[in-house]
Image 1: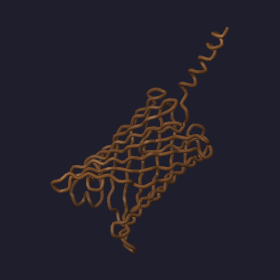
Image 2: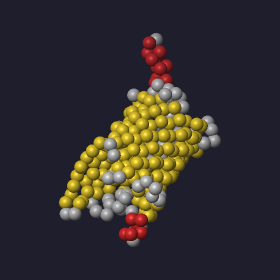
Image 3: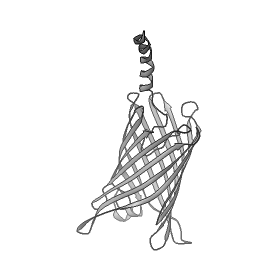
Image 4: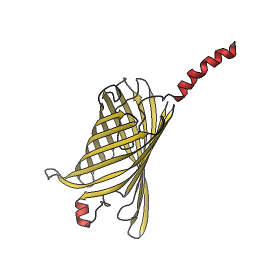
Length: 270
């Protein structure tokens, strides 16, 4: 009798173990998707980005530890702790250093659903602050599930204020595109493209000019389970543009950007 009752629970337990925990797991590292955490849900996301290769030896690592919470079923908020390290050649020496990169706050509001509506959409705002740098980043997030494919695109504007003897103002315009295929219900394989242009204004009243820009593209792999998900990408620089490229006579900007970036993001549902 008791054995029969437990057997009736097996299909239910199987469904719980194979159903994704929440619908907001990320499938890309450079593009955000429109889904948000349910109200009251909490998630932690450690993230590491490796930046390798410049005009001389260079290795940079940026770390972010994010705590996310669902405020409503459409609005989520998060706080990031940022820190990093760099190792680079300076003349004949290799110099290393590490430092805190300040804190950031994120807000994402879902407008339409990627599954129920023609296209998923959300508004994203990020505020960052460190002792010598402040920035505001706004994004329009678009995504869509088409059969076994997940598509995403972000339109990005960032305003950055940095102090280096005097205040510099930078405007960054960027576009990201991503497409990934569900190989299984849990495993995805795809590609991402990311392009950025930086406009800089040095000093009060000075003109704003295109300083530098670059285009990156490469593969992305993701895996999700009931309680966690993982996504990683490798995106080499395809081409650079701006003053640094013109002056160096090269096709890539290895002065302001890097040759290749690798990013790993882990999401854990709490």
